[in-house]
Length: 254
Image (cartoon, rainbow, N blue to C red; front, side, top):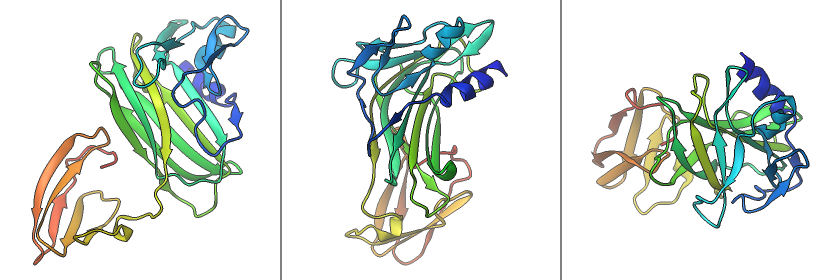
């Protein structure tokens, strides 16, 4: 319970950046907070809780994906409770990105998982959101994409990004490295609108139990998860729809 209260209270302190895109995305710039620790410019961190005796658990790391620095988030012990490393940024924007992209390297304790989220709102009312919970290789950085699902056609006025080194049942000692954060906005939305040499129809999208695939020409289709890992390869014939069962897939973006 204390973790949820601290996290909620912390996120309300997030700084606004008057920009249409992520600022200081590679965590190359850090400044003295004046409170005994450094923070990445234009980002808010859980280090602010050191005012209440919590340990500083977001630091600059030279183990970077690009450039010379990355942000290191470590799940710490605070008053006998788990305190995840938290990194957040709020942006004033009217953009409607398709996904949040970042590079991560994760060393979990036990079966811990980190989380990343993106939220778009209009006057605090949700417009779209996306969340990733999982792991990344401890041996090297992996690229992760968090897709945004829109629930409103209203233009957003605020975009919020956050990273936590542990989930709800996290464990002390987990370390998340984050680098090269960006937003991707495609000129068209919906798979059916993409021009292809071999036209393809997918429905329903998103899929829960099954996905129908119709192709104009016989095709080999590869399905990848958000980590860029090949999940399945299928053969689709032009003379009949192919029904792909997705019931065994983990929730996420493919």
